[in-house]
Image 1: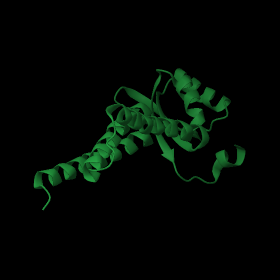
Image 2 (image 1 turned 60 degrees about the vertical axis):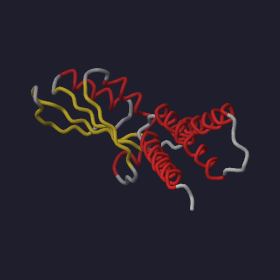
Image 3 (image 1 turned 120 degrees about the horizontal axis):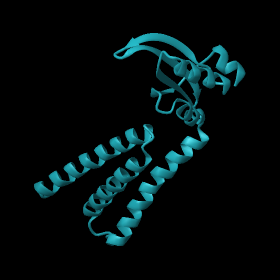
Image 4 (image 1 turned 180 degrees about the vertical axis):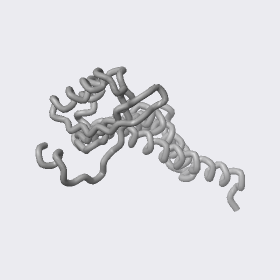
Length: 172
């Protein structure tokens, strides 16, 4: 009968490995490439160490080989996420909260001048009247929105899976 402590260690290592994988994917989805790469490094290190323990009689990786294998996995996460952001130009919804002021109106005007659709809703915040500006755009446009808004507003971003109709799909 296998050693019970050894089995429990394998079980715990696998739980840790899968938990790291889940966190890595969530960080990748949120665009946190560097954090995901670091988590991936340790995820695959745990996997390889446990695999070596289970297989036993096979060749055991040297520390240097293990580190390079883990670094390759971590780098693959980073590069894959980077390539996805460059080649999969998906859509996003940027919600920008601005003060209802001439400065806020000027930012909305600049967004529209840059060819972005901006739907403005008016509301009330803790410090007064606000503009809630919804901008449906391609992810490549997010840097432009960030530059135009600067420190004047609060911006949240959401990925858009499906969209149809409206001004955007007819003119872009």
